[in-house]
Length: 356
Image 1 (tube, rainbow, N blue to C red):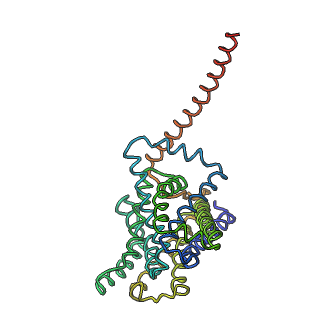
Image 2: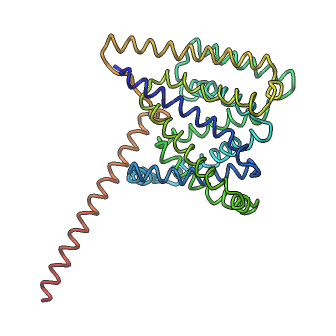
């Protein structure tokens, strides 16, 4: 059974992660006169640096390389690389939108994202949807549909967030990519692009002229790496249902920050009816998550087993087996190569003795 200590640690990690992500939402304001695009570019570089340090300190490099060795075909490499520009676009939008008057639009996108993921799971992977999940999806659809009929459209920022992330997760699921490995290579692939952007827009010169960037930029990278690490800790300690319910804390914080610090009005992000329907959908989703958590906790007590944890997006079984086989082959290859080197050294010593 899940211990109270594990649940408490996972909850603290999840809430802390949401708080850090919401703080990064405001970094564009702290880092003026850098533009939102320049801040996003710097974030990629600082995230990569922080992630490299994190992987080095936790000694995860071998696992990263073991996974890379399992990618054999051009198709697998293409699926592995394709998510990078999607993530780059999302990072850019997250930093650009708050300083350009689109904070509420981004927030609404993050509110809708879990609902979109549930619907995609139902129709793409034939996953089960409860009655409450169906009700939440219908409420959200009514809110979005009302705005489309009333105003003719929904913000492109909202659609970019809620429809942009699902392909990223689905592509990562296809190859069962570990979160750290996927993020590390996404940021590596984005690095040449952001370097060119910073050079062409003068981002390096602006950052060098103000002393505050010497601590704000490393802080941005540290926040990103720490928030990501706390999310993974929470996902490993919490049940799926409770982790899903706590994931709504971040968009709620973003909503509050958009209204208060960014001084946006509700009308800028959509109609009151749409917000009402989205709020109702979120409440229903949270009720469904809590219900699932309580039911599983009761079943755990009755049957004496622990509920499965989540370590990223759950992969399909045959892809898991494929990755495991690849890692085992890579491990055997390393052992053979190590013994071969030892044999080569022994052979060299034998030849040296024969020469004498």
